[in-house]
Image (cartoon, rainbow, N blue to C red):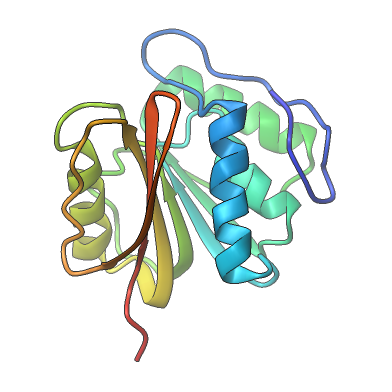
Length: 179
């Protein structure tokens, strides 16, 4: 797996394997970051969270593109070990939280949240509910949720900006209204 763009462009990172995680396909990551770039312009100075982080590919991609801070949330011990190795390999200063993305601790809000929950009915909606309950999304902030192609996502009061099917995945971009 490779970082697509930014200061670490072309650098390889270790992918998670096994049944506990499902790495986001390169084509899906490219589509997601193209969608985000067209809306955000730049990742500079953004606070980013990567939920259900696995190898950390999404958050590390955001950091490569200039994000100021990335917090990763992952519950699987093997994936956490890979995530830590990937961050160390890139010399990335990040925050890694071991635990469920469905019961997030209180935190300073994030400008961008990348959520890639396990595919299954309701998983995307559960991720959104968790983010809103913990107040992790800043006013005007963006939330990306990757689900299986046919899954329905309840935006929970967020604005659905776009939905794109990419292979077996569906990307849903949501925005929290600003103040």
